[in-house]
Image (cartoon, rainbow, N blue to C red):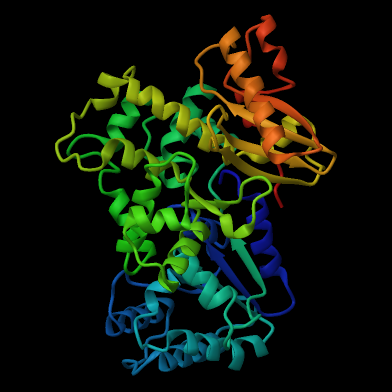
Length: 476
């Protein structure tokens, strides 16, 4: 298994505990939750079951009964409800030999169908039976991240504070994607890994779809374009699997896909044509929880001025190149690899890669131990002669420094000419003037291969390169 060292340790701590443990594993679709649990506890399950996608209560209960029979519980009738089902599970587990009992319930949100009282039955099973023992390890898993948080991890009802450990699976970092490519024997350069990451992010399952002998362009054609492309239908399946009624979610991400810096809530309402009500608040929260968007405030702004920005790599790629195309050239990427639209996409997508690797950027700057806040910032001209400015990444440091990060995608060394030097210095001046910051403001350049040596690069105080983004950084 590549990576996931911390997560596996947490699972094994739960297994080695002297008490019953209730562990919630969550994260977006295709992130590797089921793989992690099965690899960690291979051959150790007393019972395991997976919910049925879009299955009604009757089907869910029938499949739960089937899983019990497969585990060795044969003399059982049909279940009237989930309370019956969990009673049967408890009786079966109680009859097993002494030792740790690992119970794995996968895709938990799918089991919660309408008025099935599934969560109440699960709560009764844990509080009324499992938690009173010392030999139960209950592991629950689900891709509907917001459901897992609201109904299990932060439940205000019977499951309140009952989860003993929660394990959130984040996408792979560039370093982990490099480790995966190496383990497969793929001769991928750092540049190829970065560019692949720009389209599919660090979602492990997407990386398993690559062909190791292909170029990046060939793999993109294989994944995205043509009638039988491997990820041709992934977008609709992705959102439908996470959200029961995905229409509003899709309207919001569609609106956000059209603005690089993100939108205020009021702008989302206008562009997405959605109602300004509690439903929108839930949609934004769930998209953020699932990692599709990020919410940030500009440097010095109030929380109610939050901006929502689309950051999911695949969603961005879909809206840029795949939406509305029914008969795409199966060699679209290899044919248009040098087209202006693809060059523009590279610049935007590389910014998103950098936002996903702020820890690595901080390590490269030597400030891993410094308390920081991360922002984006923009200023629109307020009067004739005023200058606007857009900064995609600000690192506000507790040691009295603000790093203004300029992110540039360039194949070779990045060259700052006289005109760009003036533009960069003007941007810094606008930031100082508008924010009235008393901190020292440093310009940091983030690019693939560094900066050419010429006098115009003297405005850059710090440099972060592609090599730095591949650092292994401990986040837990």
